Image (cartoon, rainbow over all chains, first blue to last red; front, side, top):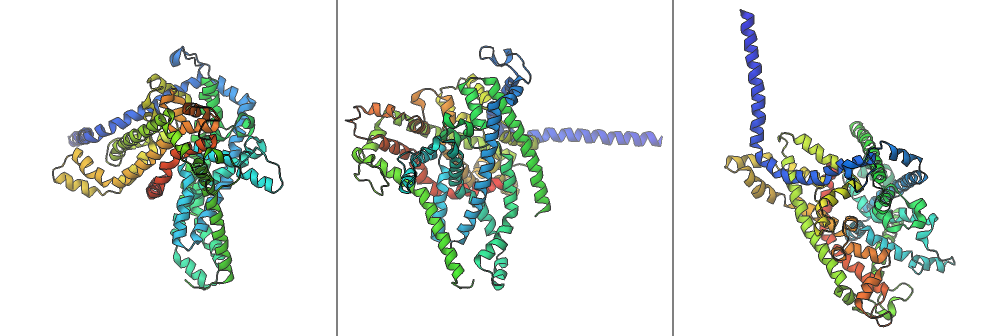
Length: 320
Length: 294
């Protein structure tokens, strides 16, 4: 007798709890009705422009023909992925992507830090502010414009060749020489990103405990010693995190920049994943192949990001 | 701070200031040259060498460039896409960021994940092209901004900002009898003015500078945008289109190609150069808000 009573009591309690949960959900949905209505247009925009294309990714596994549409085109499995890795051009493109991307990280990354430190050493506030503002300009310009500027600078009759002439050298068309192209990419990248990239480091420097500098003063340290022993080490955590994030984006070697500066003559060193994907897809009309390359890039990129994200979490947790 | 002006201080200051001045010159110099070119008369524009001031000052290039139909249409299209694009983008962003900033919203986590997902994984060039094609938007002026209004990054930045608005505000508004609609638009939106300004500026610069989407989705010359026009002039040296419209032949034309190219570049970047010094604080703030969670 006692058992059945407690059993039915427990059942009652269980049922009321479930009903309460379902009831709560319904109540929440009704209560937040307005918010759902509000978010609807955004959801629509996302579905149309971000998720619908995901459906089209399947053509990487098909032989997509315009006339047959996505549905009608036949499955070919991994044909295009095999093609990718057996094709010399693709492997070359992959190599270029890594070279240019790592090159950018190795050059622009330290430069932004050094620039921040230099800015921090400028005592005249007016000059500092003006320098910062001017240094941000390249960040706000499109590569169409910047490429135009560099094409002028590096043209046969341009200032750079003028200097070369002055020092007795021979005028060259730098942008079409394979030896010069990548260095130009790296230099112009520094030019564009050094100002804006220093912002985060400046903010970090501002957060360093002033007492550290004061005690260094007492110990008789000069400015340079202070930079090396206080400023730099304090920036290491920020550097590490930004570095990891940048690595996560390694497959993005700078489409806008390269697309506006390259020419077929330098394809061998200039072609990166994105430019290759573009030409294969929209110039050569090999839709399936192009999509396959794009899918590879995305998948690789996401895995890399997840890996890097994990690393970042560990770094944040254990500090440095 | 001790006021020792010892040797190290002086040397360091010299190095720092020298470097900075040289660096700033590398930015100012090319644009100054182009500016000078754009104001040079035909006779002097092709002179070799660095010019600090136009040898012969002339507004001709600007006059000619601004008066061509090509440029007028490009300017109109650029303004069209920037204004409509920014307004739509900010609205769509707010419509997503506001609900997502309510942590108690059921399914909030899933929705947020779906937004963040799009920041890392995309359909790719061809699938996106096919979507636009199937929507019949190819060559439609709307395509200049519509595909770009769904922006996960902006939504996250705005959401992070909205987190900082205390819940008590909303609760006391509820107690005063306001409904969700009133709260969202009469209280939250005005409070969000700073972040709306930030996102608007992000979007405006994005739309003004965007050229690739315009290039692949639009064929008609009367729907082109400034950046594309500039790109054609710079890349493909198709300055001839522009020049042909100006009439006359090489000998009788009142302007030189270099000058026209420079003038076109300046009418394209003019608004940006003029506006960005005032907008930079919003950009920096926006970047910080986004980076904290990023």
